[in-house]
Image (cartoon, rainbow, N blue to C red; front, top):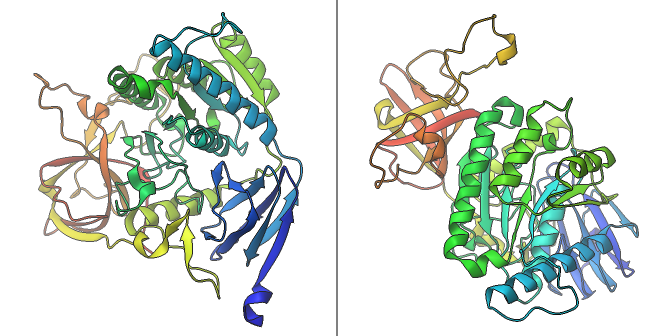
Length: 486
């Protein structure tokens, strides 16, 4: 190692049950190598001797159960903590593992063990709720990764109903996918790892094929009726899958939720309806409340008699994320969707990997295509700005309902389409005998487009997509997300 390289890397010796936490500044990247011992990032194991890259303002932690030595290059903010909630999270995993084993035993008709004859034979179906910046997504990843690593062949289903998270798709989407291998963490641009829809399918981490619905906004309160419907659609799809895949059902599911579920202004606000939609749609039997006493009491009062509510500690490593950071993350996510995962390695680092995958295979060449206005049918769900029903004059009714698909004409001034993100919908089911007005609300998303230019005199528009498929005759929905290629 040259002197220049040795000054930019540093070794940390971590004691058992401690974690090395780091936060990256914009435009910086970090390489971590496990020199000896065992370590994991949010439940995904690190391989010894491999360089792992982190970028896009990633904030994460390397945890070790038995102690390890890691080599770090170019961190921004870093420290080691011996106060972690990992023991509590591991206990949760063990409890869920017991539920899976009991469910599998019941499925195969094996006799139950006598140690707890009253125990339920249901697999874990878990809803994770908590306020903003409480580490819900991190907990979901840890629980999923531990289940996958258990060596029992589990493939738990992870559902993301937080439209501001992005998940495997673009921000504004709700999605679910069965997870077969540990979810890596390398950047918030891919919070749940990569999906086959946006990156080269030769990567093992891209075996994920998520089911995606397009909500199109960051805030759940923007259109709670649409959120409710999409959550129930997602749940229906999951339950249909389980009807055909009883072995998969045994692995259970974990649902990550938006922070708006964790804090509200009163008993009548929309979040209770959306939490109930999740409980019903996914047939939830465990609610995990992350670090919030009042919310725990609330959930115990409403659901304690019908399912298990558990309050679990929030990690001290959770970082307070502001609005501008979240906006930058959305830009990273959309850039990654179009171009693939691009994290430059720090100086002197070669043979680096992103989540254990080789770097060179992760770039894409998106396709920019000029199409006619008539090629693509574009809709907006509900009116552009929707006053609450209580603000309407007495006796007045809405002309456009929150659930009504409204056609958008690109030729109209103020259409709001320039730089807009569009969810491209799957074609309607050919088996349906009759169409219905709100059918497009129930169609899944096959991909995302950005409108980069509108030529109104020639009735042409330029769209950017990750691949070169034709969109002629297809339908798309526009939300409130915009993106410009920097």
